Amino acid sequence: MAELAVNVDHVATLRQARGIDYPDPVAAAVAAEIAGADAIVVHLREDRRHIQERDVRLLRQIVQSKLILEMAATSEMLGIALDILPHTVTLVPEKREELTTEGGLDLVTHQDIIREAISTLKNAGIKVCIFIDPDLDQIKIAHKIDADMIEIHTGAFCDAATETEARREFSRIVDAAKIGTKLKLGVNAGHGICYNTIKAFEGLREIREFSIGHSIVARAVLVGMDQAVRDMKQLVKAL
Ligand code: PXP
Image (cartoon, rainbow, N blue to C red; front, side, top):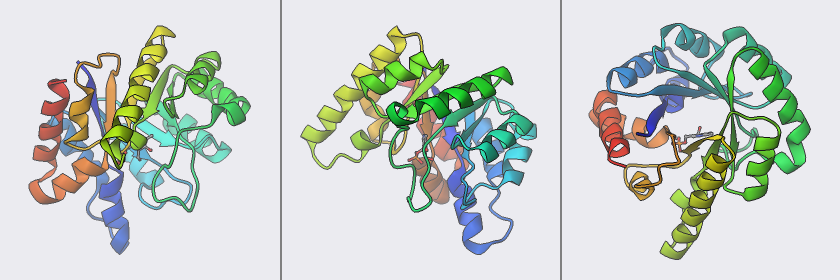
């Protein structure tokens, strides 16, 4: 059965909107775990727009399942990861001006930096996942540079404007998941997945973990974190 990793970044977005100390993403993580989350994900961005270093440190102490830290492969972030030692680091590209992570890492261009980051993190006992587009060349490089896992970027599928586009993007995800598995990489998926788009993954057993944030936090605003996570967990279980 695939696992559900719940990203609580946008609980912190709400907090930062007022510059006060609530709602707390750490409390949201506890609620998410009680509701069945298999992992908690946070993205510590260079500009600290939502998650703060304090959140990651507290989560490291409090999370009972797995703490997954999304970060860029910068020396600042590597230093923080080596100090906090999350269960997994997912390396993502990062631009200050983007609204959210806009694409996968380009390993063709950045493979040397990423290879070095993978080696540094793995030597400290941290599992390393690489966020990439569903692209054969990227997956082959992820394998070559010794990543433990890939997270396939599902944004182009989830945001597709037409059925045809959605079908085309989904078939790229299917191919990527199968190739990744063949290369013995752990295969995860995430970005833009909501309570409707998750259903498309039925039967795609290669995907071991779904990383989902915005849609869960958005539903939590209306029905509470517990219900929002339980609803998504049930959909993931049914895949
Ligand atoms: N996976 C990665 C690598 C991401 O950067 C994000 C967004 O922070 C997600 C998953 C979750 O995306 P969403 O918030 O759209 O569910």
